[in-house]
Length: 119
Image (cartoon, rainbow, N blue to C red; front, side):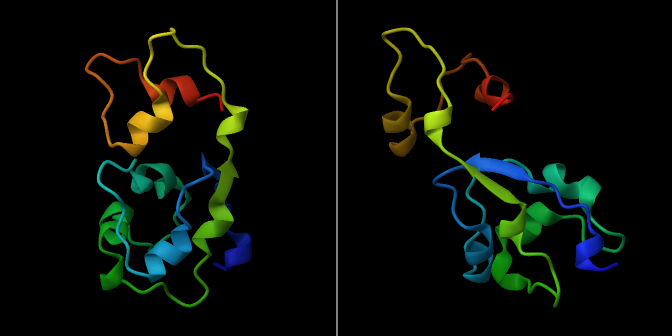
């Protein structure tokens, strides 16, 4: 199957998401807690493609992309945070500050994935 014949998905990520192709080539692994790439892409993989994408992306220096492999960046659409506005209570912590500080969501917090699903 030729690359041009593949039905590649488009995956929306935030504006500050690292360039996936550059990260893979540089041997930078997926960060801990990253959503499953296997779950996102499994249905699009051509016959014979390895299925453990998460394992490969967690250890990229052990793998080399075959000639003609689609560029990961061709499946990525960057979204800006300015497009997203979700009302929260006045006492809600600053999301950007909390994220950059590595603070996890508190137990019982509503699913952010569900809130952002429409974006």
